[in-house]
Image (tube, rainbow, N blue to C red):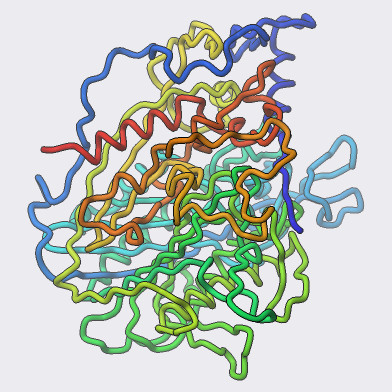
Length: 636
C-alpha cells in the first residue's frame, strides 16, 4: 500500500531562516514582521476566521465580466470549437545539469554541494547557474532530461458573440499575474472574451512558482523559461481560436465506484484505490470522471497527424483520422505518481491519460493492439478537487492481472494514467461495461456563458510572508504597510493578494473554478451519494478509529460547491476546475482546519494537517465561499 507523507523541508527551512533573522534569543516573540518573526504560544492561532479585516470595508461583490453582456451581447448560434497543443518542455541545452561528486549527472534528488560535493555544469554556456529545478516535492531537484513532453493545451469555444478559451499547462501551478501576461499577448482581433487558465499540478515539471529552487534562499524561477511558457501558451490559445469550426458535443460522465476495476474477482469490484487515494482523513473522494468530446459538425474526419510537435512546438490533432476536435477530461488527482526521486521532466499521469484517449489503449482482455481505439483529436486534462492529497496515497496498485505495480516510478504513472484513459475511452465509445451518463447535443443547443469576479484575500501564512519578502514568489501583494510588522497572531497588517473566481456554462454543464487545491468535501460534501469512501478503506469509514487528533465530521452538512448549481443543472453535470485562474495552495474545510499552536504554518498541528502549512490561512475557504455565493447570486 502506498502512503506518501509530504516533506516539510520548505516550511521548516523558512522557520530556520525566520528565527535566524530574528532577535537571536531562545524565546523569540512572533511579531511577525517577516524580518523578525517570533512565536508566542499564547497567541490565538486558531482564531482569525471571524476577525476583522485590516482593509477598508467592502461593498457587495460586482463581477468583473458577464457574458453575454457588454462586448459579448449574445450566445445564440452554432457552437464552434478549435484546439491546439504546444509543448512547453524546456529545450535541451537551455538549462544546466546538476552533477554528482563523480562528475556525472547526479543520481539523487537533492542538490547538496557542501555535503555531497554536487556541482552545476554550465551546460548552456551562459556563465550562470540555471538548472531546471523541478517543482512539487523538495528543493534542489535538478532535471537531467525529459521523459515526455509538457504542454500548453487549449480549447476555444464560441457561441454567438461569446468566445472563451480553456488553456491548461503542465506545471505545478501558475499565478494570476502570469496568466494576465498571457492574456495580454492574445491578439484583440481574435475576439476572445476571456481566457481561463490552469495548471495540471504536475510534480515533475520545471518550477513556475518560485519555492523549489536550489535551496531555501534561491528562487526556482528562470525568467527565460517563464517567458517561454507565456509565449507558448499564447501560441496555443491563438491557434485554437484560428481553428474554430462548427461542432457538436458529447457530454459523458461516469463514476469509478460503478466500474468493475478488478476483473480478477467475481462481480463488480469498484476498487478505485488501484488509481486514486486520499492522504488525509476524512477519506472522501470525488470519484466522478467528466468529459466533453467536441466533434466536427459535418462529421468529416480531420487528418490524423503524429503526436510529434513541429519546430514551433505545435501540433494538430493526434492519433487516428477522426472527426474529433478535442476531448476535455476533468477528474481529481495529484500528478506525482513518479515520485520525489524522479529527475526527468514529465507530465506524469496527464501524459498517459491524454495519449490513451487520443491514440487508444489496452485493457484486461487485450486481443488487439490497441484493445480500444483512440478517438483522435487533442485531449486536454483539467484537474479537479485534488486537495487533501488526492492521488497516489493509500493505494492498492495492481495491474490488470492483479500483480503489484511498483510505486513512485515512471511505470507507476504509465499504468495509472493509461488505465484511467482506457476506462474513459470505454465510456466515450458507449461500452456497456462502463455505466456512463451520456448527452449528445447539436451545436445549436450549447450556448456559452460565464461570469467572473476578482477580489482580495488575506495571506495569513507566515511562510508565504517570508517567501514574498525573499522574492521567491513573483507576484504583488496589497493593502498592508511594508514598514510595519506583519502579525498573524495579532491579526494586523496582513498582506492581501488579488484572486479570481468564475462560473461557466457550456450547454447543460456548469463549471466552477477554484484558485487552488480544493478539498473534495468542499465540492461534494461530507455525506450522501457523491461523497465516496472506498469500502476497502477501513470498511468504508471516512474516519477510522485510532487516529491522533481525529477530525470530527459535523452533524449538519457543510457548505459545498454542488449546492450552488443552477436550478436547471443536474449534479452530474457540475465540474470543478481546480488550480484555475490563480494558485493559492490548499483550501481546507473549516471544521478540520488546525494550525500548530507554537509555530503556525511553519510546522503541522498534531494529526493530519499538512495542507494548512501550504494554505493562505484560516480565512481562505470562508472568504472564497462567501464570494462564490455572491457571484452565483448576482443579478445585473
